Image (cartoon, rainbow, N blue to C red; front, side):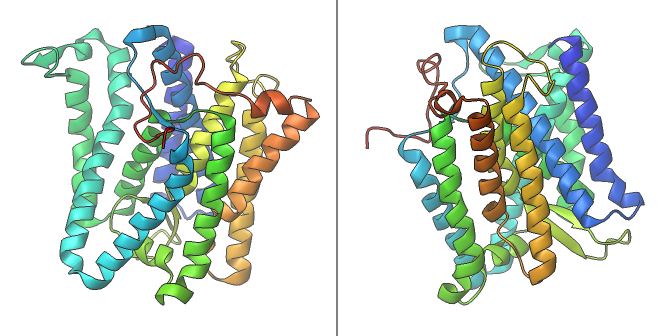
Length: 357
């Protein structure tokens, strides 16, 4: 990792930590918290995904396979997510909440600690070669010192959340999950991204607006409130943090994030990795679309005084911003046909796709 790239990532991580921590000390409008934190997570996640893809391609056939969303997995994803959401809703409704909460909380916190530690370990590796030393039985059963130290740093955060439900610990762990998901998940092509977002558009609308008519309760909101785990970002309404929070589901950042990350890599297809506006027109247009969508979500929340499906606003914001930019630049066909499958298909492991069904 070059010094400039490392400096950019460290700056973003420091900024992220500051944004997450500020509400502990000063009262910040919920809208500002939500907008700034989600935008920084998007930028950092896309940057990390791009670096991971560059490393993967440089390793050639020795690269680790990546998890790709493509083919039939695209239309299955909203259906699978719906099934999982309904199972959680029914579990909370009919099973002892103590047992359900213990399983979900323990599992999600454990994954979040590992995800958060994965952000710290590479930084330790860059600081000193000492941290790159590995300990274990053999090459296949070993762990680096940086991974051990980073887990040791993040584990207390997990304990703090598990036993105290402290919102700051929740948000730190949630940020780790968001960044890891955007970094490790990938879309195969632009078409897949558009189809996936379109399916999630209707998924979000139904489970927020329509589920109460079918199941007698708002399934999405019920699960989000009862699921005690770092699967959402919490934004305190006051400095005293007396359980007065607004929330933003991680899916409203991760799922748009993997699409925006693909647009970031599309901008870099010709080898220009600069962060200048002219070098990343599609990324910046998508970022603007996302920001306008978050603003629209919050305005609708204020006007209607009811939970809003964020993807109702985010999906059109991303697709329209990409389409508008492509038409202005006379690149619509190029954008629509862009795929990463051609130059890396032999290295990919589409663990959640099956094109032959």
